[in-house]
Amino acid sequence: MDKAGFMAAADHQCQQQGVKLTALRRQVLELVLAHEGVVKAYQVLADLQRERGIAAPPTVYRALDFLVEAGLLHKVDALNGYIVCSHVGCCHEGLILVCTACGSVNELEAAPALDTLRQQAAAQGFAIAQQNLLLTGLCQACRV
Image: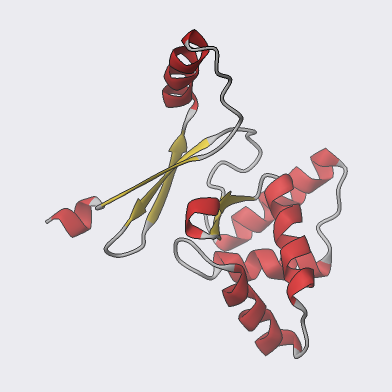
């Protein structure tokens, strides 16, 4: 999906949820979209400061948190960053594949893998929380 299509889907998603994609939130989302792969909050902050002049870290973190809650971004805790959700409008858990060589990111639906893990964990009396799974390795291009 191109940027315009993603932004239209983001607007629709927010309207469906009854939340507002403010000008600042939209700008933060556009800045994340401009990066390939995982983007860190400080990168978004630096970009926002270049465009707006003054921007405080809490402003960026609040906007990023909103975008995660709205299902537009995924927070990748293991990499201390964010990625754009490739399944806008679909409440799901993602299987996030990150290439350690080039940094490319691919997102897949994690439900089948997590269902198996949840069954195995339940057999041990353990309940797995809702989450995204992160796997690192080499993408097809870097394996050649």
